[in-house]
Image 1 (cartoon, one colour):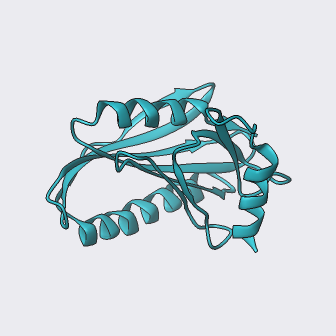
Image 2: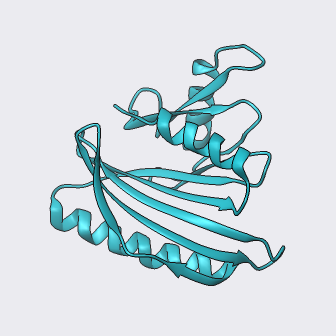
Length: 172
């Protein structure tokens, strides 16, 4: 059902131009916690459950994973971040070797605090080097947006497209 709601949201927000971006509202258009805009040549893999990630992947093997979860307070936020880093690191270890996550940094985006964690690894199947970006943005609506980016090293075109998508992020 959520998959259909996200696809319907994309259909409703699609601008119709062959070169326009597609706006994605998560989890649905009626109850969005955030939106992003992605180029039309990127592929969407919808979330399968309400608290699951959706994936947008570019033509140059860039992967951007997004979701949001409601949080009640700072303690819950810390627990959600810790759980996400733990389970995410396990997932990364399944698909990448030599995974290294850097030190978290804190900052602010449009008045909302965030935590960002850099990383790197080697994709097990292809042997390609990648960089990771993991971020948690604490939204004014009581949600925490979570972002995981996987970018091939040296893919300047993919990095620029990914940055444009991240820059299009709008909290609702």
